[in-house]
Length: 128
Image (tube, rainbow, N blue to C red; front, side, top):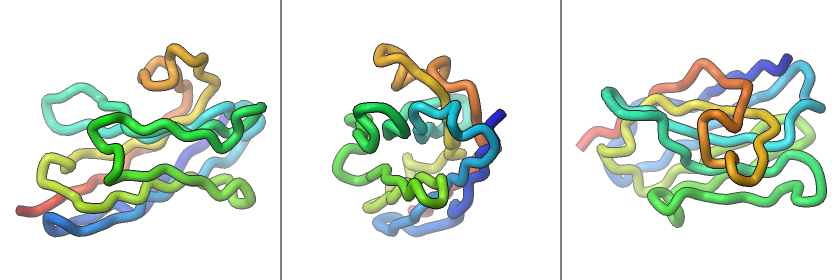
């Protein structure tokens, strides 16, 4: 089992920045990739970014077009933690942000079903 704990959410004004963190513990050898998703009220969970955790593509990242250039995923392998740097935040970025981990295949890396472990979520609210 893998446990994921997110932190760093909060209230920020339009144009501001936040940095989310997600610490993984437990059977981290089960992790091939980690990702960030978000879910706004009444909407489906949305993929944001993913980073390869192990294997030949370790460290490779992929970002959704909707956040490319504003959000950036990164990791610190020594503390088993990934980050999501969010800049130029907009009110439409308001959502609960979730960290995910698992062993997705290439075709499922941007999908909810690709990840078997999830954090509890952290609220991000962007005021206008």
